[in-house]
Amino acid sequence: MTTNSLSSWSALQAHYDTIREARLRDWFAADTSPTRAERFTFAGGGLAADFSKNRITDDTLRLLVALAREAGVEARRDAMFEGAIVNPTEGRAALHTALRATRADAPYHEQIRAERAKMAAFAERVRSGAWTGYSGKRIRHVVNIGIGGSDLGPKMVVHALDHLAHPEIASYFVSNVDGADLARVLARIDPEETLAIVVSKTFTTLETMTNARSLRDWFVQRGCPEQALAKHFVGVSANPAEVVKFGIDEKNVFEMWDWVGGRYSLWSAVGLSIMIAVGPEHFDALLAGADAMDTHFRQAPLERNLPVLMGLVGIWYRNFFGSQSYLVAPYSEALHYLPSYLQQLEMESNGKSARLDGQFVDYATAAVTWGEPGTNGQHAFFQMLHQGPTIVPIDFIAVLTPEHPLASHHPKLLANCFAQSEALMLGRTVEEARKVAGPDKPELVPHLVFPGNRPSTTLLVDALTPHSLGALIALYEHKVLVQATIWNINPFDQWGVELGKILGKVVEADLVAAQFDPSKHDSSTSALIARAREASKR
Ligand code: F6P
View 1 (cartoon, rainbow, N blue to C red):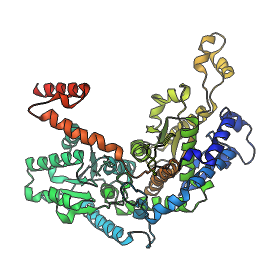
View 2: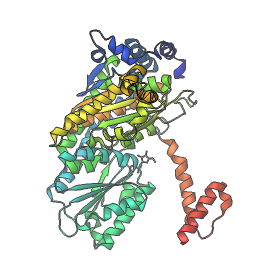
View 3: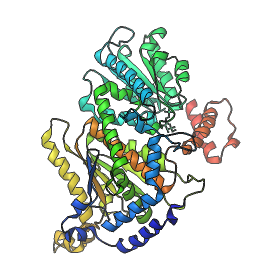
C-alpha cells in the first residue's frame, strides 16, 4: 500500500490547501455553541485530551478518520490484540497488551499470571526485608542494569511514582557503557545492602553485560563471597540460559518473552524494579490503567478514540504541514523521563523507510520526538517555539492535582502550562506589538510580534497515580501503532540499530589491538581511532 495514493490522502491534501492560512485565533473568536473546546475534547481510559488548539476543523478530523479507516487501522489494531504476527520481519507477535489484560481468554494469560506472581513474591520479600544480602542485612539499594527498553520504561515509571516508593529502598538505573554511569552509583551504594537486577531481553547487549560484569567484580572486591553473589543478582530476560551462564541462580531468573518488544516491555518482569519500588498493588494498578486505555482503543469509535486522534493529528503535521519534530512538554517533574522514554517508543518504532511490502516510503515517517518538563523548557527553548520560523506541534501534559505536599506551587505550574498553549495559539499581531512597544520604541515592534497559530494538544491527567500513568503510556504506545499503520511500516522491529553495533565491535578491537591497520577504515574513522590510541598511551 502506498499511503499517499489513498483517496483519503488526496482529500486531505486538497483540504490542507484550503485551511493552511486559516488562523486558530479567528476560529476561536468565531466560536459558537458547541465551542471548539467542547467539540475537540475527548476522553478515554481516564484521561482527557483537548485538541482544539490544533489547526483542525470538523472536516479535518472527518478526513483524517477516513484515512485511518482506509489504511486499515482497525484491522491492524485487532490483529495486534489477537496475537497475529504483526512484526513480520522478526516473525513475532506484539502482545504487550496481553501483559495487562484481565480477561482470562487473553493470549498467554496463565503464563503471564504465573510470572507476575513470582515477581510479586520476590518483590514482597525485598520490600519486607525478608530477602537479605550476604551479611544478613536488608536490601536498601536496587540497581537496575539495562539499556533502551530495559531501562527507559522502568526508570521513567519509578521516577514518576516516587511519591509511592518504599521509604527504605532507593532505586538506581545504570545504562551507559560509559563507566561514569556505574561509578556514580557505586559511590552511593553498599554491597551488603544492594540488589542488582540485570535486565536484557537478549542478555547479550554490550552495555548491559559490561556493566553487569563490572558490578559483579565490585561486589567480590568489596567482600561479597562468590558463592553469595546469588543473593545480590537477579536477571530478567527472554534468554534464561544466558542469565544462568552469567552466574545468576535459575530460581532468580524472571522471564519475558519474544512476543514482548523491548520498548513495550515495562509491563513484564522488566518492570521488576517498579514493583520493588512501589509494591505489587501499585504495579497492578499501572497495568489496570493501561488495560483501561487498551479497552478504549479497541472499543471507542475512531472519531472519539484518543490514540487514533493523537496519531492522526501527528500525521496531519508531519505529512501535510511538513513538521520535522514534535515536543512533549509534561508540566510535571514526576514525568521528567517521559520524553526520553517516548523518544525510543516513537523513533525506534517508526523511524523507518522500508514499508511492510518491502518498498520504500516516499513520504515522511516518525518526526523527531523531544521534550523537557515545563516550566523549565520555557526558560530555555520556548523562545524558538514562539518566534522561530519553524512550527513545532506540542503535547502539553497537565496533571490537575499535585502528588506532593507543596500545593501552593500548583496553580503557578498549571497557569504556565495553559498560558503557553494560549500564547502559542494567539500570538501577537503587529498592531498589538505596537501598543506594547509604545510610541518611543517603534524599532522594537518586529521583535515583539509573535506569529501565533502554533498548534498544541493538552492532555489532562486528574492525578498522577499508577492507574493514570499506565493509561498515559498505553495511549502513546497505541498512537505509535496508528501512525505505523498509516505509514505502512513495522513499528516492532529495529534493524537500524544493527550496523553501528557491528562496526562498533571492529572499532573496539582496533582501539585495543597491539597493531592497528588504518586502511581498514575511511580516513576520518582511522584518524579518530589513532587519536584515541595515542590518548590511551598517555
Ligand atoms: O539496540 C537497541 C535495542 O535492541 C533496543 O531495541 C532494546 O530496547 C535495547 O537494545 C536493549 O536490548 P536488550 O533488552 O536485549 O538488552
